[in-house]
Image (cartoon, rainbow, N blue to C red; front, top):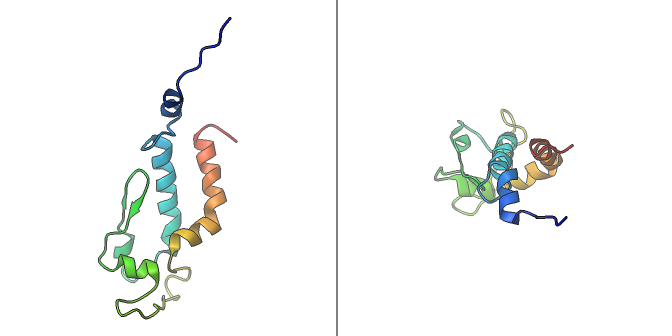
Length: 114
């Protein structure tokens, strides 16, 4: 008896792993939540981000400078460690190093894996 396979696009859509699919949205949301503790915060406005399916938008006017760790003049920024001890520049990279494996596990669980 011949075996009939579904097209890859159908399989991906069913699993939610296609671009803009439910797993991509879940992954992006998990990353945003995990980054919160590394995002610099004085009054919390930088944490008011928007989540798109495959990226996160920090749309405050100063977000780029905070992310790069430099002021508008090009001087290095010093992040206050009193209220927010893990705040740093390039917070996505730092978060991924610290929590990437956990996020991968949650995505696998969401897909029905181990």
